Amino acid sequence: MRKNAKISMMMPDVREIARRRKALGLTQVQVARRAGVSQSLVAKLEAGLVDAAYSKVRRLFEVLEELEAERRAVPVRVLSNRPVVGVQVDDSISKAIGLMKRHGYSQLPVWDGERAVGSISEGDITRYLAEGKDPSALSKLRVVDIMGESFPQVGEETPSDVVVGLLRHVSAVLTMKKGKVMGIVTKADLFKAVE
Image (cartoon, rainbow, N blue to C red; front, side, top):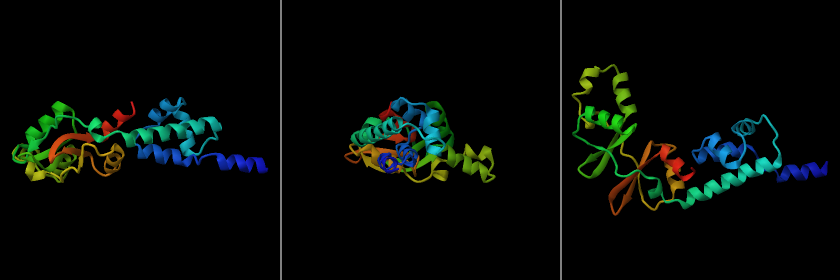
């Protein structure tokens, strides 16, 4: 009995796997692949449906620790997309939609000259249409008419784990060097640090 109590004290709390995986912005498949276990095992552990071998649970925690260390060590400039595709405040909504389609982006920064002053996203456009506004009027609007808040800005050397925290609340982060926008990081870019 005492021996079992000692073993359970050494076993990490498997509920931490889901929390730490999500904090890294990773899927169960990505963590499972890196740990050399199946995705279904990760899913069952996270749901509390299975008691796995200590070695497999330990390996999952080792992988999470490795990934967290890698994420902290990677400066955000490594993950950022360059050049930054954006629109000016006085550009048409049609131009913004065209750029999003052409580049496969769901959001763009909005510039006033070289200064970031807002953002435009598929969500902003969808909200406009959902308010019952005439879709044909959309092509006559300027970006400034429906743009949202500007994306947060961080220095290029900011550790990527800081950006992971920001991306839990916003769709993109701009990277800066000497007051100039150098790149943009979205949630999809976080996987560059892992794969």
